[in-house]
Image 1: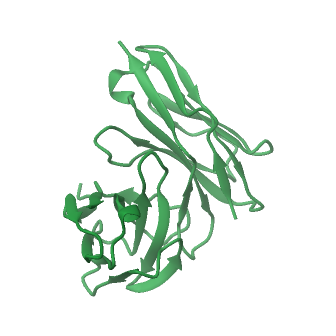
Image 2: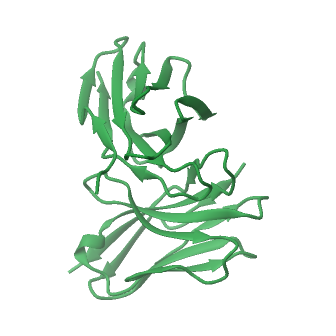
Image 3: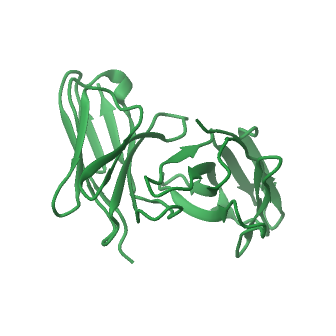
Length: 113
Length: 116
């Protein structure tokens, strides 16, 4: 079965640079989520989209933005990167129906030097 | 706001034995869902099991089962016949029951080591 596809798998950036992470949800899933997992921490919700519109917003810094495109893929844009942004970034997708489990991608490991 | 607490940062179990991971949560919601996710060293987040709060019957998936105590706000995971491949970080997660979004709130995780 098709899974959530994230790219790139690894990304190394320097401070103050910009990074773009991509996510392709499971076909027919109408909701996409972004999570950030710092070292030794649990995943923290950043933002979600339903049918290409922002749905919920969590602890996403103002330096970050995201959008969902007409083909349902989503991108997380991070600017003015800081050392503390180094983390594993997960994308997940699900159906909108309440209780539908989230299916996660393999994550993008971002390292800011 | 919901909070999820996993009081056991690390646990170990011998292969083929049974282990139980604890999870408690705090919410004012009456209808919600609870999940266990597994994160092996490969870092992938894998759904293990799902429980609907309005169902009294405990969910079961092969060797994995839960003990859901709604009044106590407790949701423990039991792994039977532990296998080496069960070695992973296990996260308990809470989801409100509505159609406005299925955001998960995670606990801090329990690192499980299965020993041969």
